[in-house]
Image (cartoon, rainbow, N blue to C red; front, side):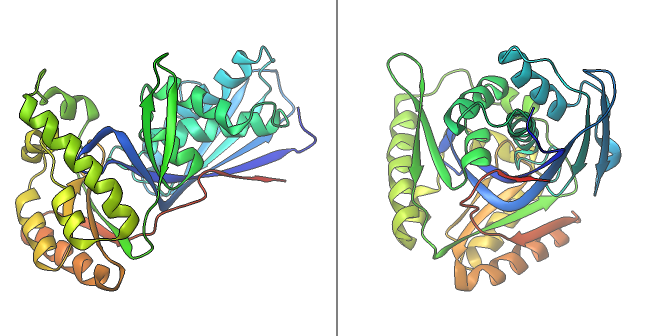
Length: 309
C-alpha cells in the first residue's frame, strides 16, 4: 500500500474502428470518467461504491461493478490482499453508447489499484492486463495511453501497439443519441465470412486512413472512411443513420462512421468547420425525432491520469 489515502484516476472516452479499422483501431477523446479510490478502515476486501452524474442510477454499486472487479483483479494477479476501499465514480462518458465506457472502468480500476500499491507495474504491464480483461485492445489501449492506436499481434500472439499520428487540423465530432445499442446485438448482425474483395477493400482503406489522419489530407480521409466489414450491416440498427450521414457530408465532414458498436456516430471534419458539421448533424437527428447530444471534441493525447491525495 502506498502512503496516499486517496487516488483520483481520470480516463478518457474512446472511439473504436473509425471506419475500416474494425477491432484494431481506436482513439481517445476529450470526455472523461473519474474514479476516486480511498482507503478506509474496514474489513479487508470490503467495498463501498457511489456514482455521480447522468445515468448514475444505472451503475452497479456492489462487488460486481466492473471498476471494482478490475481493481481486485490487479491485486489478485500480484498476490496482494485486497484492501477495504471506497470508490466514487464520476460519470462523464455515456453508458452503452459506443464510447468505451466499459474500457474506462477497466482502465480506471487497474490504474487505481496499481497506484494504491505504489506502482509495481509499468504502463505496458497494465495495458496487457486491460486487454486481457476487455478481450480486445481497440478501446482499452487508447483509454490508457491516449492518442490514436493501432493494435496487432506478433507471431507469438502478443500485442504490438502502434501510435498513429493524428493531425491537429482534424476534429472529431460525436453525435450521441438517447438510445442504446448492445455490443452483442451489433456483433450478431455481422457475417461469419467475408469475400476476398471486401478484405482487400478494407486493407487498402485502413492504410489510406492511417496516412490521411497523419497528413490531414481531405481527399484521402473522404475515401478512407469507407468500410465493408461492419458498417453496412450495423447501419440499420441506428435509426436516422442515413439522414445524419448525408447532412454531415453536405456540411463538409470528411465522412461519418459508427463509433465502436454504436449508436454514437463519429464525424471527422476540418477543425475550422467542425461547428458547422455539429449543427448539421444535430438538425438532421432532430428532424428524425431523435434526441441527440452532438459535441465537437479533441483527441486526448494523455490517456489515463493519476492524482494522489
